[in-house]
Image (cartoon, rainbow over all chains, first blue to last red; front, side, top):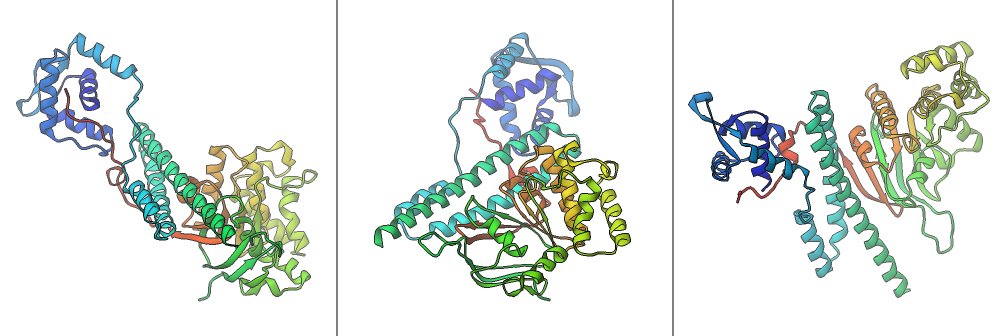
Amino acid sequence: MSLRFAILGLIAEEPLHGYEVKSRFERMLGGTWEVNIGQVYTTLQRLERDGLIEASGQRGDRNKLAYRTTPAGRDAFAEWLAQPDDEPQQLREGIYLKLLLATRHGNGLLGGLLARQRAVYLQRLHDLGVLEDRATREGRADLALLLRGAILHVEADLKWVDGCLEEGRAGASADQEARE
Amino acid sequence: MGALIELDDVTRAYDTGTARAALTNLRLQIEEGDFAAVMGPSGSGKSTLLNLVAGLDRPTSGRVVVDGCEVGRMSESALARFRRRRVGFVFQFFNLLPSLTVLENILLPAQLAWSRPAAAAARARELLERLGIQEVAARYPARLSGGQQQRVAIARALINTPRVLLADEPTGALDSSAGAEVMRLLQDLHGEGQTVVLVTHDAKLATRHARRVISLLDGRLLDDTRLAVTTADPQDLVRVTGREVAG
C-alpha cells in the first residue's frame, strides 16, 4: 500500500508522468527502494480508476501522459500521511533463524557466529555513518534522516547480539557452577 | 617493526578467591599510528586494559610492553617516568585541577617531567591553537563547557608528546554534538600520526572514527575488527521495503 500513497504524494507536488514518478521515488530514497516501471504504470492505472488521479492534459518528455491528483486524491493522501504505521516489526535477517537453530542444535558454534555477526554490524555502522555524513554534507537532510534510522536499527542489532553473548556467558557459567 | 603496544598472554586478577579475573590470557598488538576503540559491557576488562597500557596497573602474569618498556618489571620511579613521558591519559570527567587556569593545567605534566620551560610553553601554545582553545587559556576550568574542558584535558595529555594517547570514555560526560567533536578531534590527531586507544560504549562513535574495534567480554578478546574504508552507496547497505502491489 505504501508505494500507492508514495506515488500519490509525489504527483500531489506537481503533475508527473510514469517515468518521472519512478526516478523521483528512487532518488528520494537514495536508491534504497527500486521499483520496476511496470509496477508504477499499474499503480497509476489503479489510482486513476479509483478517481484519485487524472490525466493532466500536459504531454511530458517523449510525449508521455502526465497525471495530477484530484481533490479526492489529495484527501486520501492527507489521510494516509496522518496515520501512524502499525505493521508488525520485521526481522528478516537470517541471523535470527541461525540463532534459533544453533540454540536447538547446541553444537557450541553460537559464540563464534555471534562474534562474526558483531563484526559485520560494526562495519555496517561505520559505512552508514560515512553515508550519513556525506548526505548531510550534500544537503540531503531527508536521506540523512533515513540513514540515521538505519544506524539506530544496526545499533539495536548490535545490542541484541551483545545481549545474546552475555546470556550465553551466564548460561555457560551456570553450567560450570553446577558441575563444580 | 614491532608493535608499539603488545600484550602477551596477560592476566590481571584482583582477587585470588572465586572472583573472575579482570583480564584472562589476553594477546593483543597495537601498531604505531593505529586508532583503536575498546568496547565491551561493564566488567569486561576495558579499563583494566587501558590502565595496564598506561602503567597505572601491573599484570598478574604475562607481559605488557609499551614502546619497548615492559610495564610489569619497572620500578615505581621508572614507571612514574614512563607515565609522564610515553603516555597521555584522558578521562571521562576531564580531571582538570579547578584552582589552575587552562594554561597551567596544560603545563603541569611538563613541569612534573622537568621539561625546559621555554620548550613547554611553546608546545602549550601550539596545542592551544591546534585544539581551538587559545581564547580560554587564562580561564579556570569551571567557566568552560564540557567540550572545552575535554579539549583542555587532551592538550594536557599531549603536552609531553606521548607515544600513545589513551582515553577512557572521553565522550561519556558530553552531549552528542560535543562528543562527536571530541571524536573528530581524536580522528584528526590520529591522521597526524598520533596513536590513539580509547575505551567507549558508543558503537556509532567508535565505528565512525576509529580504525579498529577491539571487543572484550569477561576479560577475554571477543572480536578484533579492522574497519574497511567504505565507498558504498545507500542502496548497497539499506533496503526499504513495503507491499508494492496496490489494491
